[in-house]
Image (cartoon, rainbow, N blue to C red; front, side):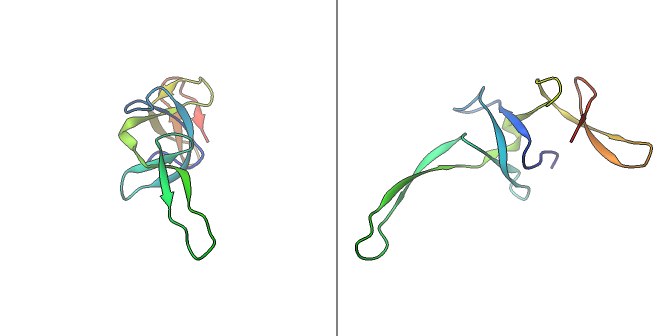
Length: 103
């Protein structure tokens, strides 16, 4: 999977399309990612034990990788990722629009 935790992505499909956020977790076996503050739902928690109150929590659901685009930190555009091999033989990620390295 080309995306990593901490990358900024733009949502391209679904109810949150057009919003951007940072990747909180990557689930490579499912081809999904969890983006902070996007694709939220409410989880109702039952009270556990005597005297405790129940609660409602906001949580993020995973999003398909096909429904997001990486935001290049240099040119600030949604772009595809490419790879380039450096002179030392190291493989680095690059932006397809501005050809800059993405760390």
